[in-house]
Image 1 (cartoon, helix red, strand yellow):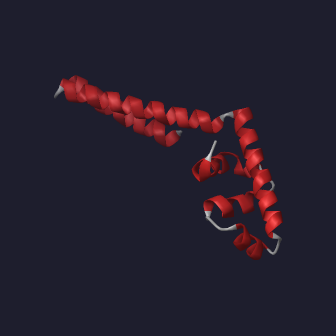
Image 2: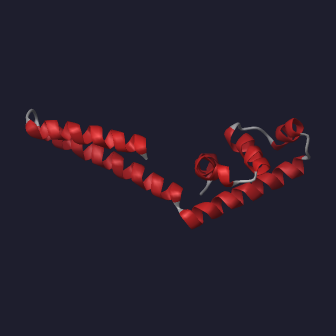
Length: 118
């Protein structure tokens, strides 16, 4: 996984599994968009210590994802839910008024509920 968005998603899933200092520095760096120097000054540690902490946390997060795959499954589920909603919308449009359109509306609502659950 590349980029800040991916690391933030990994932090959402696996952040509680990290050592407190690693989680904190990584959230500050990727989530709060702070520089290594800013984090070092705020935490009273060296810039190198922050860099090492962030690098180690990132490696651990990527290892967790490689082993467990929760983020990948989450993103895949989100894509499939979107596809269900899109198809239900197309069927509803083609069906016009009536029981099929009502079923499509219920299907869209169920997909929305499932998306909130995931």
